[in-house]
Length: 471
Ligand SMILES: O=c1ccn([C@@H]2O[C@H](COP(=O)(O)OP(=O)(O)O[C@H]3O[C@H](CO)[C@@H](O)[C@H](O)[C@H]3O)[C@@H](O)[C@H]2O)c(=O)[nH]1
Image 1 (cartoon, helix red, strand yellow):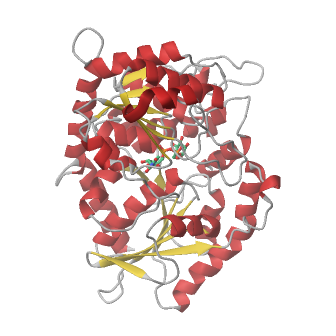
Image 2 (image 1 turned 90 degrees about the vertical axis):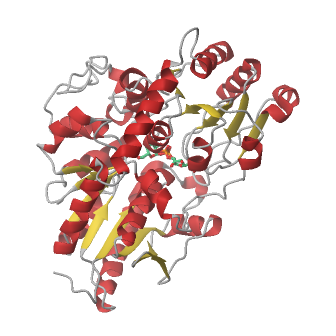
Image 3 (image 1 turned 180 degrees about the vertical axis):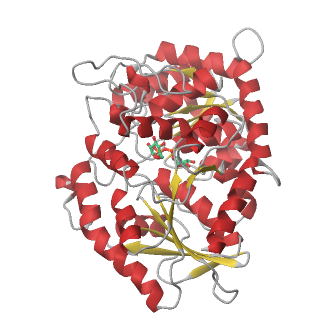
């Protein structure tokens, strides 16, 4: 058991992506506030991007949080040495392991040499080799699953081949899993679809399920009330602990550490000038890039809808050769003050602003939870991965909006008229009460209760911290 002089040292290893580092930092802050020493470790190229854009510190500098500390460390990844022209997802994932694995082992051994041995590791999806590192160094580990419990259950059943999934011979069959609603073939995470557009990520994800059994806990950024039945069911198979929405809790801690890949532009004055629930917020997360033709349709749909809108159009990806996206000039001239375009926003703050009336989202899990927990209805525009499954749940199970897309595999252009019609439905609720907003507000209340004192997520988190202290 750790002594009072040497607080437990929790070492979180995070896949280099915004959708992973956000929940991981939120968890890191909560753990540090419990008086623990917390190291958040990610890949060097990604760490440097975060340092350039935000307020994180590298090396051995610690940020105090309550009685504990957070520090950032980066493992070597060899990514910047690859010519961006030769970069693709396969190369990226392979290089990360090649350089990352020995470097991560060295970093962890260094902690012992420097008199702060690692008590436990917390690992992320898409990173199966980090599980091998924990096993090799005989360090107990937990997992922070950054997607929904429903999606966790789908991957788990696929890995264990416990029910039939679409195959190349039979690509269109529906999937019936215990507890979950019937899923059409394009409603399972697209990495599992036989077309295998993103094979390498699917493979990484699945290989993780073969390495899960030694994990002493799987933390999930969800809350019991949202996914009650599937959480109960899966908890009998794997030691799951829903501890979300993590962003609600970490907001309360008010610690000046952020992990944005880009500097967020200030939108608060602009939002303050708008009436309550009058603004459409549009953002497709950190990795989805729609084709320009689709951007044009959304732009016209928004323009014709008459609503004000705040739209995040991020700059092209550094590695994967995406094009800069722009709005048609005609739209820019027409919208004037009614529309605001930014390269990156402080999304948590935007979604909690009273002027926001709905969120056009790609349905990444972080964005989905942030919308639900802020009581904001959605127009779902999923593309791939878990987004297609999240969209189904947001619309059909949680009742917080409508969907405009069935994902990139379908590849249909969604027209400006459809977009205008859906925006109107979700912003105004059609002819009667706005059921989408009512449902969203119901989830907002449930999410706040889960993270309040004595709430389900708070209790689960405390149990987890107690476990760490006993290691
Ligand atoms: O202008 C912006 C846009 C986004 N965000 C934040 O960035 C995160 C984005 O995460 P998410 O909504 O999950 O989207 P992605 O970045 O696309 O996340 C990837 O990773 C997630 C977790 O694995 C998956 O659920 C997604 O499908 C996958 O695309 C969220 O916390 C947002 O608040 C900002 O702060 N400002």
